[in-house]
Image (cartoon, rainbow, N blue to C red; front, side):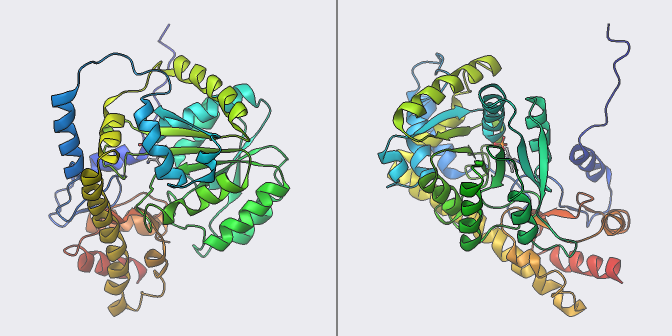
Length: 396
Ligand code: PMP
């Protein structure tokens, strides 16, 4: 039965990691992988997380199932984190939270919900977007389409995006990145969010907002601007939230699907359908990550520690963005790469061409995805002069 099965190429990023490991260049730099790194190049466990885990170990009394929607205590803290402390959406009891195995799990639940409950609706993603969006929505059987997002000069193509959104058939789903757009780093301004809201309203589109980097851009509340605007202004919104990055608990698979409905009654109807999607995929979500997050956010002291650590990560990334552009100044390239300082989140569309990316790898041991996407957390004050010199060489 298995004889005819073909081997497919592995994930391009995993190949990059392998090649990086084998490279013997002592100055090599990894700008490929999608996790946060500190100044030493590590992805450590956050202090607030360690403390919450110590408490959990001591206080945990059972390992029984937590239910298809996950732990209520988790939903209780994620909803205000995402929608805001005094959200009118929460006051109206029209948002439902379902704990999920990461943001990816939330996206798959959303995809299954769309495929089964809103059949024949297409889904629109930015070009480019996180590659797994294509995989997840297609796997659920939804027709996938793209809207432009970046122009030929490596700038946010807001006009192109808007023109495309205006052509989307009524009722289709449009995927928006809440902040820290992956892979480009180009985010919408407040004004642009309002413009998108108007088009979404006019065309009766259903927004699905992917919120994987809350707190990595400008701040926990600032990054939620578009999410809260849409949820408060529209009757129906889907939000997929992730705690992988902002709590640094990538391997604990901790996310949340938030379904916003017109009223409490419709929210409960939808919620019952989401429970089925969860059950058919994996029954119950893993408990540990959600317990960490809810313990931290239910405790003022731990919350304060977490805020401090998150701020440190965000400030580090935003400082490195500015310092990168600064390091290119002596080569007269600061204007060309000024976008890196304006973008937000872990990733940057640098504007480096595939050929330049290849040269950076072969001649300098600098590794990034061929699209020119760099993980900014891979920059450091030690490697910035080397990076700048290498970039100047491939621009020469
Ligand atoms: N959406 C986007 C845009 C992402 O970049 C990621 C993570 N790379 C996810 C969702 C999924 O995150 P998680 O690891 O929580 O599944």
